[in-house]
Image (cartoon, rainbow, N blue to C red; front, side):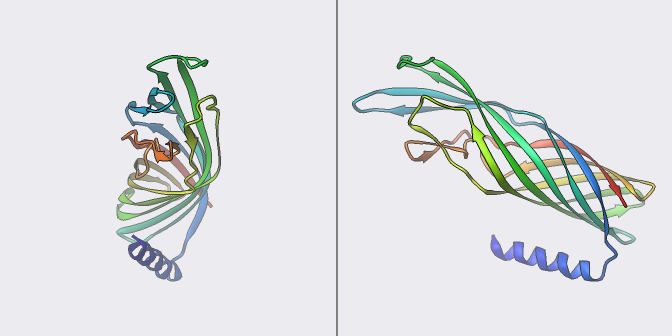
Length: 215
């Protein structure tokens, strides 16, 4: 994985040395498209525990930051540095007994992160079509789950994804982008049950609409 990423950075860097880069501001609104999923968690021993953990949804996200853009006659390259906040919602059902707590518990996992999507592709007049990797770094996270000792929060600082981009250029300085973003992480990666990562078999993919204004 590291060698292709290093190669991509070097190619972008060499291109930048010979390019007239344009810097601007960007806002992006993302809607989650991942389905709800669930998994069973169980403990056998002195005490018996059988839980059904469900990923419910991810709230819509508004992100904002800087955008760097370059183009020639037929090719474009775009790098964004965005700040965003995400919130995943979960539900746990106790399938045996309430164990002195509510049999149904709803909770959320919130995080603040810096997202750096890199995109390159072809430009035909005012239309852009391309794609590229997304790098996410988590600045902070919090969750409001309590009363279940066997479920522990895991903090994953870095994760990646990929994006497909279709954009339109309005008078050179204003760009509108429609993106399909695929995340390589799992919505259960933030938690472990008895030391084992929770596998919910769903990733927080989304569709987003962005507006960039270049200076």
